[in-house]
Amino acid sequence: MYKVAILGTGKMGSAMARELSSAGAEIALWNRSRQKAEDLALELANPLVKVAATVAEAFLDTDIAICAFTDGKVTQNVLLSDPKLLELAESRLIIVDMGTSGVESAKYLDQEITKAGLRFVDAPVSGSVATIAAHQLLVMASGSPDGVEEIRPVLDIFAKKVAYLGHAGSGQALKLSVNLIVHSLNAAVSEALALATSVGISASDVYDVFEESVIAAPFVKYKRSAFLDGKTPVAMRMDTVVKDMGLIRNFGASTAVPLNAAWAVEDLYRHACAAGFEASDMASLVRYLKP
Image 1: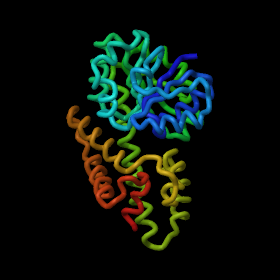
Image 2 (image 1 turned 60 degrees about the horizontal axis):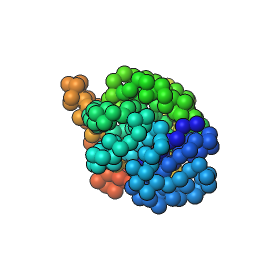
Image 3 (image 1 turned 180 degrees about the horizontal axis):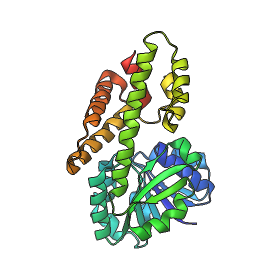
Image 4 (image 1 turned 45 degrees about the vertical axis):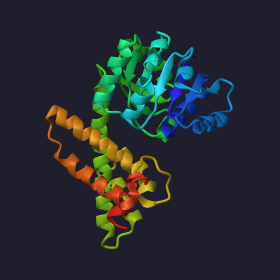
């Protein structure tokens, strides 16, 4: 079994660590706030799981380092702020970015990590904590082709599919394209739910029809409780959606592809964040539209 470092023990990183721990992997946990990593190690209660004091320590005798940060700038800072970090890492180390970091970030990380003699895999995902637990995560991998093949057995522990898409940045390009649909669909469902309930139809009845109609995508089905119950645990924060939409807008500008709908969707989320919903789940957009 591979030795894996998990850098970033938030929701997704912790969920991956749980599955890897159950599969018998040797894991080093590191988080910017050490207490989070300590709490996760305590929860896992596995002698093969340790907490690293530094990223350099997490890299020691490690095969794969999975970065699970929300922001690409954070990932760059963690990996590149100390020039000696990559130079001292063992040559077999494969660094994997599984966050939504953006195309330019993936290209830059690939350039710097490759320059240091290591391999980089850009591998954002489509799914959630529940998807990881069900081993149904979709991984959009790009970068080092042999690196992808080497880490595939590890990713297969919690993923249903690892799609290889080519040069570094391609994974991010497809992830942003998927997220454009997800965030737009979330906005459309929010507006439609607010619109239908405005004439007195119960939200539950409206959603029943949504789930039986042509819009009944998997996203619509599994987000039901989040749309109907404001107390459902946060899966994706509204300000994270705004971050994604900014990356999507910049990506569109770099390709000269007009993203007219994306501009309107981003504007809607920005207004919701300004109104105090920044830490709320993305489905809370319906409560911003209809308080």
